[in-house]
Length: 291
Ligand code: NDP
Figure (cartoon, rainbow, N blue to C red):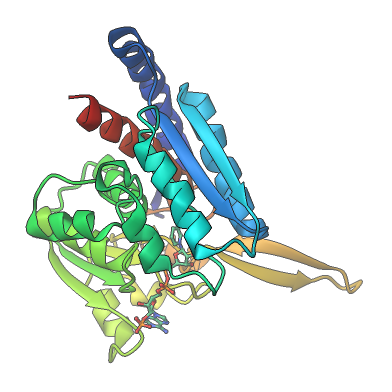
């Protein structure tokens, strides 16, 4: 039976530590780190993520600003808002909640954020530095995944890691971070032949696909570390016809837990760690800017 990697508990202990760090920063530098979050439109999932980020900032004692813009905001107006935050000495981190409405070019928006305030680590300057092995802001979800793997106390060096998914925000950066820790890394995707065989070779398996419970027990090597990044909302219809929704990951938790050595739950796994790493990145941006 797998041991649970409790992202919620790990997040809480990291955030408690940050409280003390931020109090110390305020004493030393006369102000707290400040995170600015821009949200466009009313997408309920985006609203809920943004609420979680602002709440976490309050919890750790950080300043935050919320900029809310209408769904039909122009790309130019959004860029002007970012430019204003770039110039604002009191703002250390800028996050634009994705996805953006279709009429806005996300790449242009990410490029508009000042490199030293890019707390998401999505700016091409940070991506380049990550792949070159230079100091940079590491994207929050991959950074949280690495902290969870490291929390098991199992070494990464020399292990075989398989990352299922090759997105710019999760799959690719987490593969690079695992490589940096001397894992032998395979990146799998929708065209991978024999995905099950590939996954079964993994000592560390990261599932970042967005397909409910697609990784089943027969795809997992006994004793492997399994990190489930997926957040999928699935509907369940009761006998009386009422429909409810539940969140599930990309891993079939019930069967996987019988085979894996360590496993993350959904919810309560990678999700809370992502938000906690955002707080950490904001502190790091503050310290880099002030020094
Ligand atoms: P993307 O949709 O950008 O990428 C999904 C990846 O999965 C693609 O590389 C795709 O391959 C691959 N894929 C799709 N179908 C298959 C398949 N049948 N077999 C193998 N690979 C497949 O997703 P994200 O990386 O943005 O997110 C992945 C999941 O993680 C989502 O559920 C998302 O909600 C969640 N997420 C959770 C976060 C958290 O904080 N917990 C943060 C970010 C994301 P191809 O490239 O060939 O199309």
